[in-house]
Length: 134
Image (cartoon, rainbow, N blue to C red; front, side, top):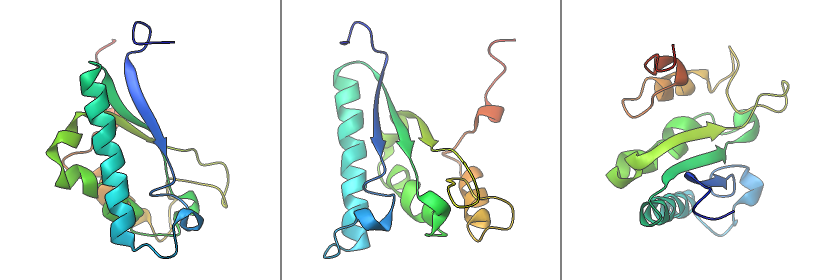
């Protein structure tokens, strides 16, 4: 609709951090992570240029086959590039059932990693926000 109607400049990115089927088999994990960081840097640069709020509007690793996905994939660019701290929010996709989920359920091997992510100093969950509308 154009800049006059849009407040958030967002990007969905499952490609760089999602399903392993997306990865170029000749590319290392480090190279793939670098592409993810580059995409986020581009996102924030364009958002700044347009005076918009940057957001990673959808991402995830279905069924969390990478048990360290949150701490080794998702948070790393934010740790390494302070300019990415401008990203207002990151949304992972929904938990539909035991075979299609993006946040680990109790007992899943990725649960400890998710808790580590939740407690990271750069991460703030909705329930931690000030009560702005009450």
